Length: 263
Image 1 (cartoon, rainbow, N blue to C red):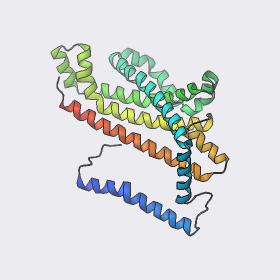
Image 2: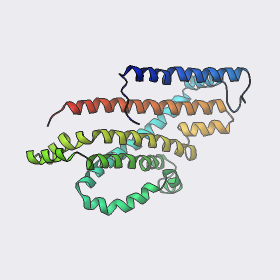
Image 3: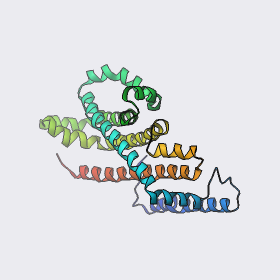
Image 4: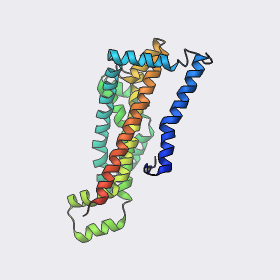
């Protein structure tokens, strides 16, 4: 998603409508329809019923337990992805031969949906945390890797020429030229990667898990507790949007800092 200049008055007004007025209108319409019994209370529980279920789950600590487990998994797997994807993108940028050699296998692996790999991952890593971390790594690796590689490869040639003319050592070239020039695309890749990681984790928890938000939703559905299912889905949406906002805020700070730096 393109970065938004929130200091613009017109954009601030639009964001206020998007994040405040529109959700209030939706909830109000939901309450009215539920009160008038114009919707099936099993398929679409009333906001009051969902709020009551959420309060009980938070008070008992059950929801917080599942949130903590899912967050530990997603950040662990996403961290592994970034740890491998960013150096590998740099290596392929510096070595076009390696890039050409591994392009074919990487394209084949990238075309396979991570959730389709779950049966094999369970055979390889069992039903424990290993299979879930593997799903997250497979889902988030390529967005991070490809965005970083694109950022490195599309850097302005004038920066490269300046670095060569100054005869900067590789470490100085990396941290003063290559990374700052590629940072916007690296951040975009990290945002995309986290989004893919979050969705893949919850898909894995829906299929093979005994804890986490995905498991919580499946367990609630089997108990015919639609209100709890809505609590789980809403929690997933809020957490996902919150972490994406955090990444965007961090990206703005990092990019502004790098724009102020000098060689």
